[in-house]
Length: 156
Image (cartoon, rainbow, N blue to C red):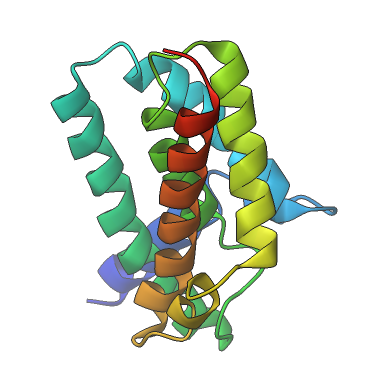
């Protein structure tokens, strides 16, 4: 049904842009990464398993929304798609959630640095197919790396 597919496409674009963060006229990736912080502040109060489940949910929804949006726009990795940054930030911050705001700020900054620089095999992950998986995978890896490094550099 046409209405359902239109609604699905709109929902995908809203999620992929993280409720409009990806439409920022400057640095949409950074704005999207900042847009993850309010969600982190809510989720960090949960049990770690619930936090991980929510992060997994955002990641799976991100693969779907990224794919639908990339297909609709005819682009491999549209700049308006920032749900990948959201999921990456949730991973990075989740690894230091109990370490305090200094460690969390460090994890966020490291995430942005690793997301932009894409060191080592992180760069290769963005070429995975289908496109939704590639869009998400490099940010998930950058988030994991940022969280581990921030955890190693911060005190418990």
